[in-house]
Image 1 (cartoon, rainbow, N blue to C red):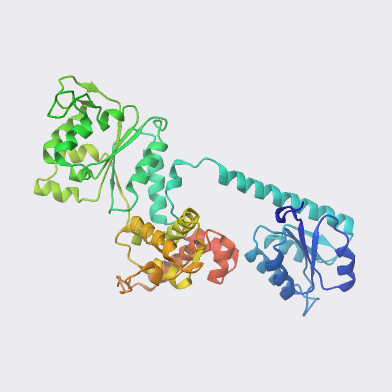
Image 2 (image 1 turned 45 degrees about the vertical axis):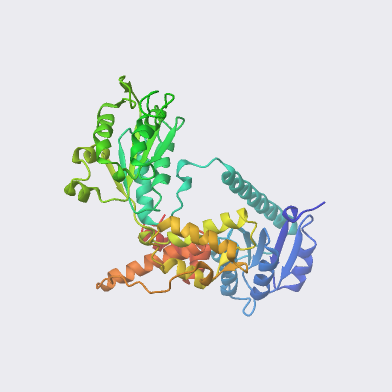
Length: 453
């Protein structure tokens, strides 16, 4: 039985009816489609998504000129960038053949056509396409890297990723600063996953989520009989992280009476369980996080300055989602696919209005708010595309400061437009170029100009 994946689809773009007939029966084992002009070629391209295309550059309405052939080549590259294109040129037209290669064609063949030789070139193009496809599938199945939990395409977050990669192999204590929902725990796990401790425990504790009277025991453990109800010895979170990484989330909410004990642990790397007398040495990497303004808390006396200096050997400020260019749309698409699969939903995309609303909304709850809105919208959506109404946006416009310098405004707008297009196109450069109305080489030049890798 032959499946759709097994079909070797070939599109021949040729306006000479005699050659059409000759070539149609020259490719045994292929499903051959014939197109006589650019319009018909693009129609068949959309319908059959061929693996390989042979393209005569001399197409109507002016077969003596290669302009229509080049336009067809560019459109095929935009629509199906993985398709292998073999251009067919006149015997004395080497210049156009080389130009076609520079524009993205896989190979060229000069007339007069020998079907046997052309079939060898087509077979080779097909085999290369299949190898590339298998490679992409293998890469997609590989175990993710520690950074895979962080979904971003913004320059702001990519610079933080580079900083994380530098810091992770060390034992320096890291302080992650940022609003709630910006992904501090994801970054903390990335630090652990990129460190020599990656095979040991990653232990997380939220200092704001545990009642103050229980937090000391939760952190440092307790001995049997240390207090009413302590019927057995309990190991604390700090001790459980021995050899690995301890993540202290919302450390700004640590009660003042516990701050000296935490300072001693960070300085000496020893603890005493509640009710115990024995000092327990530990080998622990510490990563802290908070949304609080610790410097203001130091000024008001609510947080110890010496503890602040101890936890902030490396301090990393995480931008809010509204300050991450292009990330809201990218994250929204990722969440949509995940929740649609989890809920067996027919939803597959957003309307253009919904994508624009996602992009321009301020996201005070950051990534967590975005995730929750997308999850609800997927569950409640009536059709295959999510609308702004299903996302329940408050449509009040949010003003922003506008730069005065014209060059600055133009460059910022250009950079933002490129990031938006890349996010809309799911990182497909050819499709992003189509959205922007520029050629693929032009987009690459602009990406280099703004250091957008």
